[in-house]
Structures are given as C-alpha cells and as structure tokens.
Image 1 (cartoon, helix red, strand yellow):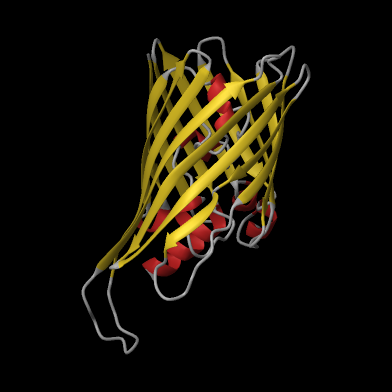
Image 2 (cartoon, rainbow, N blue to C red; image 1 turned 90 degrees about the vertical axis):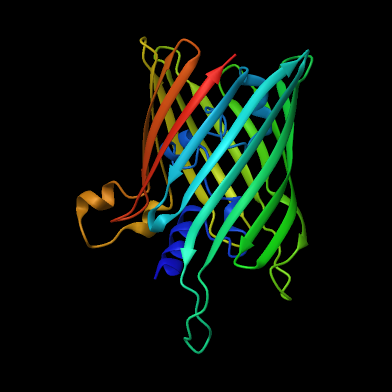
Length: 296
C-alpha cells in the first residue's frame, strides 16, 4: 500500500514522470507554498531557473519537506558572487522510506528502501545592458531502489528578459543523459520546458507570476503564484495550478476549493530568514515544509 501511495503522490506532484520521479519532486520549502511556481518571483526556486542566481544574495539555505506515505526530502543550497559571475550549488535528497519485500509469488523477502540524490552546480551572468540574465545548472542524479541503481547527468539552461513592466523567462529543466539504468529496460529522461511571465505591482508590494510547464510524456500545466511583502518583513505566498481540475471530487466543496493549493509565510530577522509552507494536493493529502536561510 505504501508503494502505491508513493507512486500516486509523486505522479500528482511531478506531473507524472514514471522513471525518475525525484528529478521533478520539490525539495525546497518555499516552492511548496507557491504550488510549484515562482520561477521568476522566487529567487530560491528549487534550482529550476539558473538565471535567477543573478538576483540571489549570498546565502545558504536548508529545507525539509514532509510528504504523505512517509516520504521526505532534505536539501542544502547556496549562492555567492565573484565579480560579475553568480554561482550556486544545491544538494537534495529524497527518501521514499522502507518497503516490505515480496516476490511475485507473494513470498516475504528482506525489506528494502528507496532514495534519490541530486547534486547540482549553477552559473549565471547578466548582459552588459542589464536586460538579460543567462544561466545554467548541471548536476549528477543518483537513484536507488533496493539493490537497483540508476544515474544520470542533468542540464538546465535558462534565459530571463528584464522589462520595465514585466519579466519574461524561458527555461529548460532536467535534460541530460542516463548513464546507468535500473535494469535491462532503458528508461529515458524527460525534461520540461517552462515559459514564465511575472509583474510587480507599482502601488502594492505584490508580485504575480504565470508559468506554463510543458513535459512531453505527461500532462502540461499552468501555474498561478504570487507573493505579498509586509513592511515588517513578513512575506505571504500562495499558488495554484490547472491541475486542480483533475483533483476535484464529489467529497466536499471545501476540500475541492483547497485542492492543489499552496500557502506559505516567511519572516526575516537580520541575516536569518525562516519560512513555513503547506500544500494540499487532494481531498486528504498535505505536504508540509520548513526552510532556514542564512545570509552572509
């Protein structure tokens, strides 16, 4: 049952990649509150838009996310600047828990575990005119299910146009090459192409964003997200997406309203920022996260 929940939950959150779910699973806290959006308004955007490193201040960030069915993720990310070069790194781990081992004849065997590790480095630079930010991430993805292992190299380029009224972005996420497969079957990597547009309100401290996520082997999605910054340093964030339509059931009107809905609160004191986020992916499932950033 636990293995079934693992497939259902991650397929819902990650838009349905069958072989390497860990590549699209959220591993940073504030992405949870934005329902997976925030490619332009969220500097710490789960390392999905490398060009955003230009806007990132020097920091190191720690995040923990708790999914249903005993699944959890932990990550550490950071950003720095050397002259006009912007650098970042991220190490994330997803643990899917322990499972009861059984053969095809339903004979008990040793219990086993499953986990994914993704190690990434990023680089970004701003054009001389300041109109464009260019960046890319590259990394190594290591996956393990019991004694079966898989590994891949990932590459994610990004381009941002900084306009007077709006910002536009085009990014590709988790393209690359598989070097080691789980078994004889050769699973393929399936990257995503994301188009983003964001705008800051002139009269209010509000940022709004719309993202279109295209994935060749699964359903595409439109994500709506935004943030509001109070004068005392409190940040409110929220988001939802077109996936809500697939999660509506006849269980409860209230539960349908809050399905595929993210909400989060962040607060900065001096050089320390903390955030807590929650995401409801259906009528009975919640994702909880907490993050801690230290600026230097």
